[in-house]
Length: 357
Image 1 (cartoon, rainbow, N blue to C red):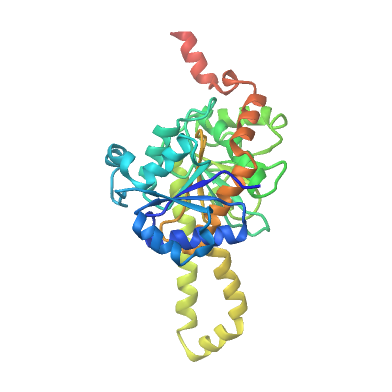
Image 2: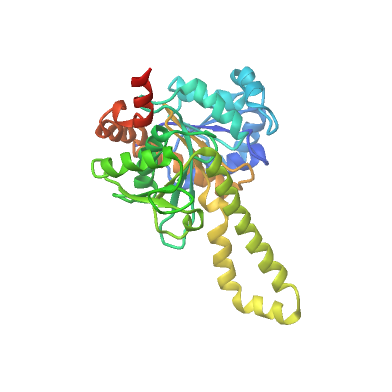
């Protein structure tokens, strides 16, 4: 049985059509149920399909788009041109039902703005959140959100992010009872902002109903240790933490390369330790964890790294197919219902303020 068609913004990313189509073809080779809608410059896409004949015969349809959103374009500018661009048309294919999900390696801010305006947020969700999968020291990865969609969040947002992140972790990491923590400046209950403490109180009370284990607060140095399945924070803090993790990984890789090239003895040491360094390289390669997800929209939109190679694109498309198969949004809606409705998520501080007015 085929899965719902996945719309691919084939013009996005650093390498554009060639890599996006090659990655889509690789994803289909892995899972023959995948069907695609390739959105972009039709003549270029037809040429690319000649190099990947497995996408012919109804596997991939081509939808011509006249324009492309550049990486430097402001979200407000992108919104005005969305209807004629490959990114905007891919998202609108989800809105009108001709595709079940969209994948793009293009401008993140533009993608968020267009997707939010076109698809709107799910009932019970105030703001969408950007979630990604990060490697850990343990066999399973960690889901982290929000990574930049919302610079400021209140306790209600953090609770909603936790519900969505737990649903996501159940699918991508096969964790039936995900361990959820809120990112904070310390693990003690008195640490952090009032919004963090309020969100922690709600999650502690509701965790059992939501089939999650709320383990309180965590600090940034524990994100990749494998001690949790979901880490939740606001978009400003999450984006800073993510860039710090990525920068540290690159620093370690560059330091190792410089050390191994420093002398003949070091080069011999590199040859001896090469299996271990290759394993490290594989573990830290972002292509192996490619595909950030905008959670909370009325439709699935996945953001691929702009620098992703064909393997990275294939992983992003494969992740999208799995989320469609596992009915992610329906599962989020069911968990929100178990939480007890919108009143449960209202900040006690804000309720008191409303009563005083």
